[in-house]
Image (cartoon, rainbow, N blue to C red; front, side, top):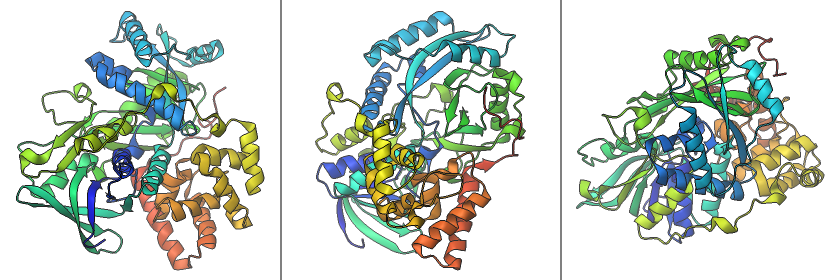
Length: 537
């Protein structure tokens, strides 16, 4: 790319950066998207994986953010029904809760009205009774139903948007770091880039830079000698723990309070239980952030107090992970009080005209943030019409005829066809046709998975995967599954190398790098006992 000119360069390949690049490319502008690691490998993959309207934001009076989030939630449910699906939530209060039942009822009524449709979130009586039996019987519990949505794998959503950006003309590069933004006479002129895999440096020219690097946004400015009167960010670490399903574990999402009054979630996720999140100030390197022992103990204690009969302890935790939320710099406020609304910082006043930094943002509102960014730099970005949208029922992975058709096309099992539809939507049929070529392509990635090697080949061929971690943690994220172990990693590497033609040295190097990345992301804790892994009754 040495010497090439772009109208827009987007720094950062999380969900916000990919959404912005897609929007700019669709507006007909020559767009470059760069990411220092892999797309969706930062904050996006370390989130609670909820697509929500922000019920909690009502407490802080952010009605505009709630309205925007609810609108975008509906769009995602319609446009990406294979990845974003409605989820029932139960909000639990006990006699010690800091929020009154009256206040919660009023908030839920307003939330439902702002969503523009009646709630269909009634949890079954059987599930309520099952949950009541599992909860702390020494407390008086109040249950409140509402509905939001879950995106189990936002990494897959990023992959789809990434391909749409490229189809619209964008050039994308992962493992490409922005060393510095070139500023001449008070205006952006270009960037110095470094390929992280080859070490090669390149210069590109650009008319605009949009800094979507999340918690790295201030560092991009520091490297580029852009002088700021104060930081843009006040990083807040959010940590999660992942538990095996336990007796009494909920089949619906639970939203409640810890002992200190902080809300937290207990969510069914990927055949496991996801618990989070914390809020701890973190000014360190976002790439090295990790959950502290105190945070893990806090989450373990919170869920153990909620489900005392499950005998949950730190030894029950499969692994923990953490990410740094790039919230606006607000040193005088508690993290929970800092706005979750995104801010577009124009650097013209900092002597770097035509550079915009994105501060904040979340999974739910990435597309609306992208439209706002496009308008900020003079591009047309019309609002989609939510009223005319309906879910793509033909892509619903629960429709048996669709599953059977994919299975027939690829000569694969119904479980494999269903998994391909859930993760690849419209493109599942193309992957199935490729799988028909050979038994090696139809082989499962690991013995415990229904996902097949053909999906891995597609990730390298069309989804810009470069490393084994890019594939198994994000494009085809089987390594996030409950079954995954080092033996799964070895077996997957053997099956993939047989198809891609890696020699022993290449396979060993890929496997070693993958194991290092996975353990740095999913911090392993002591394995839980076999008895604890028993599913709920």
